[in-house]
Length: 322
Image 1: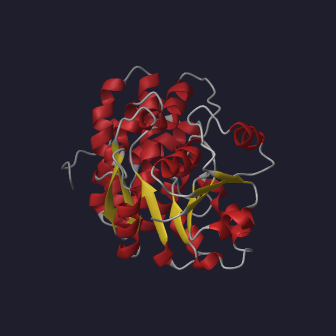
Image 2: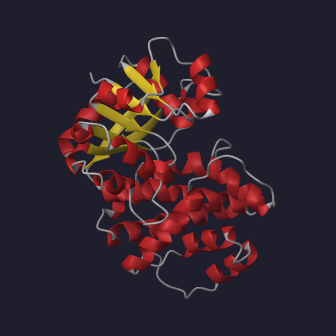
């Protein structure tokens, strides 16, 4: 049984810490001492989602946190990963650690997958994995189970993690398709925003078509990037649609709904930045992403939802899977 360090103590990071401790892993959780949320959370050990027992070690010392354990789980905003790794890279021995990515996004400014960001700091790809899939903390903490997937470049790593992390609350599957898993997981947030936009416009009945065409769109991109297009139909993407396109707990869905209603959403919706990054990848690999493009243009106010739907419906008739 591995000991873990969790870098990040927001919504998902705090749950991961709670989950690991609950299943017998010695766990250290790190957060920024300049963040008022972290100060309050570490003082009370309680946030809106979980309460951490005394057995969990809390620290604001990044060097101590990284050195404490061999397996590092990262759960922060995707767009801040490079800046975090810049700090981690100054810690002796950081390259010898194993890194598990527990967020869903693609770097907006470069189009890099998150494992590519970490490996750019000299970490061998054989030491990098990603843990994604459907589930909301509000359900997990009520004992409602779900399925998730752990992908890694090195099969031995994903197999070890699947066996080490499994519990009655989460069943894990193993994958070697890092490209497909990372792109699929990130892209489902974009589809979540699209679903929210349909909800906000009272067009919820279109969400079934969105699921079918959205999955096919992302499958094409995954294949063009060198991944297995079947990953789009697995737990990283299509399997996560209920939690992202329908659940009231979904930040991305809620963002899309409020955006259409011209209201502000003050929480993180990773799909906003991811839509831009996906279009960057699509241009690089000559793949059309009509739904993703529509979402991005609506957010940037280059088009309205009504205009975007007209464009989508006016696209040439083709065979469904051609």
